[in-house]
Length: 168
Image (cartoon, rainbow, N blue to C red; front, side, top):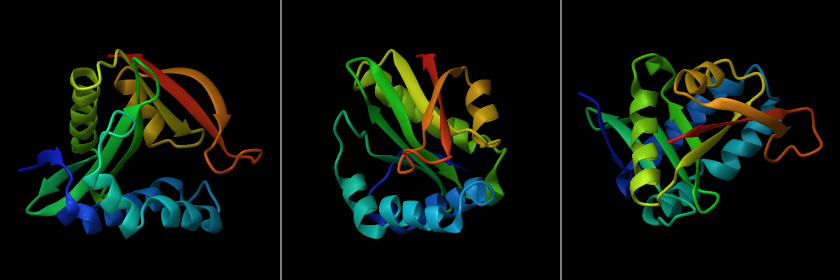
């Protein structure tokens, strides 16, 4: 049985693993090894994740985890980027657990948090231009392409991010 709930310090190692493994599985054929390692080192290190599971405000709602048998099998989080605009900042699964509905469960909980706690009426997500795991996932859940922009941390580079939004 899969349970979705707010992440806490006991989940830090599991969040780190699922996000790092998910990032490699998603972007291993798209980004350079150096870029992937830099992003993982910046965002999915123990200290940062520990801080992000112990703090929560409207800019960052905290991590939400999918748990099965006391193991983190998915993690996600979002926050607000404006008065009524929420954003999905991170959403990864154990790469061996795709197509089981885990991502949808996580997205639903983050969306509910943004609507109820932060009064969001619109939700955004950035998906890398060649990410054929993320694009169909978000489009199937009502996100609509808006525009493209440089990928975070690669401004001026070749990597492009597609901005999607939906009314929630």
